[in-house]
Amino acid sequence: MRLHAIPLLLPLCLLGGCRDAGVLAARGPIAAAERLILINATAIMLVVVVPVIVLTLAFGWWYRSGNARATYRPDWSYSGQIELVVWAIPAMTVTLLAAVGWIGSHQLDPARKIAGEATPLRIQVVSLDWKWLFIYPQQHLALLNELIVPVGVPLEFELTSATVMNAFFIPQLGSQIYTMPGMSTHLNLLAARGGDYPGFSSHFSGDGFSDMRFIAHAVPAASFPSLLEQLRSGAQRLDDAARAQLMGRGSAPAIAYRDPDPQLYQQLLQQPGR
Image (cartoon, rainbow, N blue to C red; front, side, top):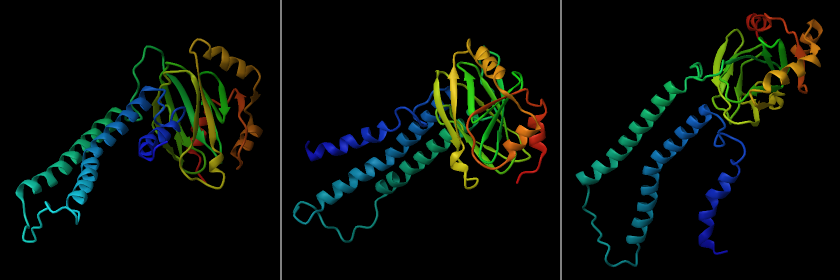
């Protein structure tokens, strides 16, 4: 392989790691919109970066010691045309970036509901030390470190923390949001395609925070009710003993619980964090 081909292959190598996971592998409308903002912002900034790199190389080549045609002008100090270009391009870049950020921050407000023909699914999320508890109040089911959602159905998350501040993030579906003790935040997502999408805590919260990982399973909407009912029928009851075990520190495998207290989320929301 010739050496001059190496720079052309580097971007392909970098993109290869984003093929199956991450923010560039969007699987929902929110993640796709955020990816578009990232691409647009990068393209806008390259309008400044690329000409600067090209001109730096061009000036270095033109004013090399061996070029007799290059004119040395030690008394030159000012050019209005150059000043106009030097200040106008960065000013336009900042303006465009500000517009992209302003519009995107309003259109992608986490609490803004997603329009859809299907009835939204409400899921309550509680961050623990160092686990994730997902409560399905309408299905009378709770899942630990595992999330199951139907494809094409708007998801309405209510999130809080029973311990310390944390952050909930499924990169392929979009929008990180914080979970805080004593506060309830809201996040709306939608899985446009079926699959298994990794989720994790993106905020340091203690020695075991790196274990706060889960898989979001996006399943066909038609099979979603029967799948949850199957899990519920074979699950243990979320009684006081199971709840006390959940509140303890440490990681845990994925577990399904049936019949959680209808007021469990509110109780965890109102208790003081550690």
